Image (cartoon, rainbow, N blue to C red; front, side, top):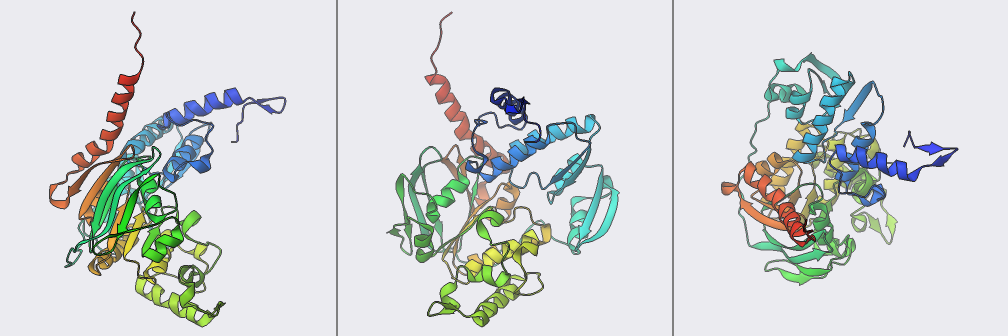
Length: 412
């Protein structure tokens, strides 16, 4: 954007595409047309475009703020390759991340902030991941989470052969009451698109959704219909799609519960504040009060506001798209605890995450999407990280093989 190839004030679009294609290839975006509007890309691909842009030019200091929050292992490796090249050129890099294993790979020195105060500035080799976590949250956190005693019931959500163009292809699964059902896959595999179809944000070409016990077919042709049916979506882009950043906590929580805080179409300010205070206390939202502007909160507390809005509606099916993206370790475990509590209440939870270890920590089963298709579903006792990664690539390998077979051959 700041280095457009031009002559006499006219942009050279052919040269622009060549430069963009080369930059995109360095971060694995080879398959995307450089003329595609960025707004049409998923948030993961948007992140990669932003990274590609900042790798261009002769910068001396480069700051990465949670660059891998929406990336899977393949994209992270491509980014690290570029970081190594930048370091070799003498570029100074500030790398902000809550993924400690990444810091230990790319950083030589670590600075830890807690509640706005610097608590550490040391060579990173002096600390283990567990010790860094303790510094970040001020207390010990284990590598396991106790989901508590819960009873998995009968299926509450059933998705049958849901399809939309080439993004989601005949995906079928069911989620039981009290179950945390994970969905894994690479960026572009169709994870977010699948949740949007279930929620009615996009229209399916074919397939059906059933809810209840036993599940009965329902027509979900809009988010309004989904909410009325008892389905909630916590979006991956909380700032762009989940919150009114310029409005108060109370206004954001009331947004999905206007019927409970208004009479004859007139908003009851006292009821709105009471609702917000209830969720601030229940969700442990760190704030100056219900009237604080949401845009002033940390990422973790913003996410709690979004979740608190839906808890007031008592939805039976909750769809979480990257629920812990860009939030600190302590807030992550708060949200994990909340997911466990919702499961204990008998709700059906579907969780999409780019972090395999997160899914393995909290889920009862994990389904893997690849190139829009559900490749396999693994039970907690039978999955390994290698199996999940292999399934994530399987759909693309099969697709590439079919394309290769269909390609015309030339005899020499």
